[in-house]
Image 1 (spheres, rainbow, N blue to C red):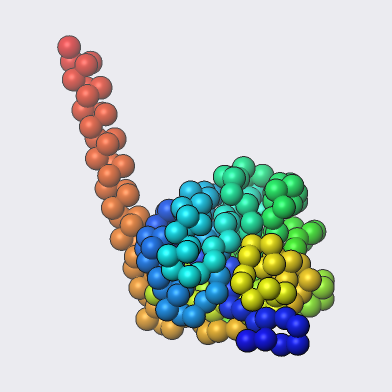
Image 2 (cartoon, one colour; image 1 turned 180 degrees about the vertical axis):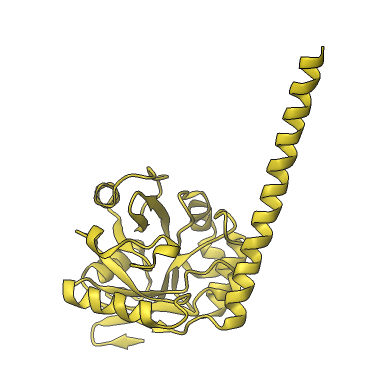
Length: 247
């Protein structure tokens, strides 16, 4: 859609693939769902790795969905989205230091699901500087957390983004951001520029109770399988060590 001299596009800035420990779905499934949702662009933001984001960039032309490389970084103060970066980030560093690391690579530092400590959200006092705030996250079930994030962003003058925070392909685009860009063909540069100048609006819906339960059932299943493999390896090492001691 064209509005004046600018073009409205739909962008989901917070999407996970199976490269994240708590998510399912291949890069191909995520991009296919983005196309079916009518998105113009997605940011692949797996936990502490850009591997899937870089692979998605190689595949974007097959799905007609532009890919913004990114990563959700585990900082000492909580999670931070770095959009527009392809390098794997340092982890467990202070938020302010990680914001600078992102900007040094021409990326934007976005605070996702702020104040939600059970989801590794950054606390209010730790947000000294950033480029935007996620003001609508599809997994904020009651809406209270999103309203608090929106009020904080408005007071501080930060652009506000909406995102699906998808951990399953079918959730991609349920919440997203509408942007006004200068070029009808989205590029990483024009998208980041629109966010930086606040030409963005959060839209979409929250996850349903059923979607919420499925997400956490998936997480429990993955954790159970991971724990079983870890215990199996540990048992094998203990058995081997015991055999050596007997000899």
